[in-house]
Length: 184
Figure 1 (tube, rainbow, N blue to C red):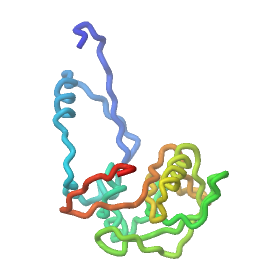
Figure 2: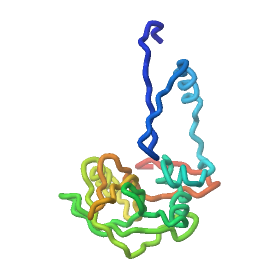
Figure 3: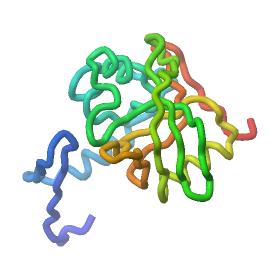
Figure 4: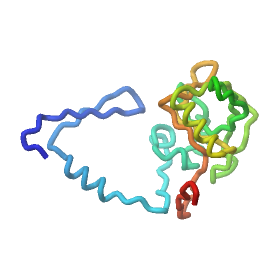
């Protein structure tokens, strides 16, 4: 809270295109901090906001929400684009190189149960993407995986430091969720 602090320029970016947005106006840091402090996680999942701008674009909750996956499947945009989100089964994995064979899944129901499609893709897990996969496997996970922001434009899909690699465990609507810590 330095009254003589220099002006701060902030700039936001938007994942739907390459646009940048400069923030201009009065300082809102105190209000933003107060809003952040008032944010209290609850055990009840949020109501989904299904549509093009969330399910078809950027959403922080895809790893736990079955709605984006069903929306993409119904709109025939599942596994499309240069960067894609996917639910997959890990069929083969070479821990030393990060090379893998993935089987694509599609939703079997509205709750997000994964159904294998028989379609396989070569993949390479690099850097933090590989570390994340190794951590998930070390925890004993053997089911479907959520892979976020996979680079799909080459012969082999690339899962790198910019990607999410998480167990696919969608949260059901209207049911409280209580996280179980390791060792509990």
